[in-house]
Length: 302
Image (cartoon, rainbow, N blue to C red):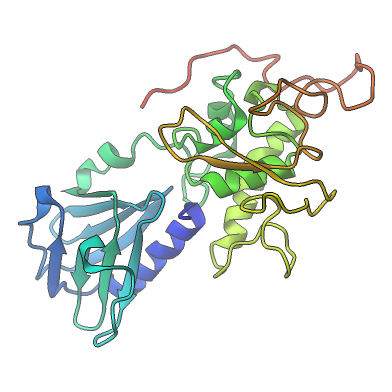
């Protein structure tokens, strides 16, 4: 599943294959840009921005693409068989003398002026793998709607750019809270850890062929994709549910023992997701929640 780390890898592959080279083939298979011809122009660079790809081309043009759930860019040497899917799924072809980049199942593909890139990516929050990364700004964005569930806040690219369903589930496990916990109820120490941990995970995986959050050779992920197998930490069966309003597929995984808090089928349970750990009385000297000293403001708009 494409997330910030895999998009970064795709950008690197495309940059190595295309940057500094003249396009000898150009085919954009979307109605709006079907007649656009980029042949004879030099590719300047390929830059990731969150989960977006920006291929900048001589003449002040940028080809903007987004992979969403199952899009991909494949790079082929001359004579190599194209294997990214059936021909009808191809949305873009960019070829040079020695490499051809083929975009499959791209739900977003548009050609725009490079000066207009903000129209495509200007709404994004700090990029976890970008030069604009700012953990304080990312945390501030997440806390602007304290009642919003943590999982949905993490997926909102306006807050911080690069997290998808996999890292959402893994981060919530590592923070020991459910993805349905209101973000404002995240204890302050874990709230400040969240952006640091998110960046650490994506940076660790941007150069890996197989994503891993566990550091274990036998299991790559703690919870994502593992229901109903036992939790690696406590042995309880991992659970799965969709999160959000149903307009998009949001598979979400969690351990009901290691991650106390609200779930789709029950109300809040005691634990790190509330104010009192399991089996203890309220502590008047506890660390305040992340938003207890913040003014509640509406979430950012698109």
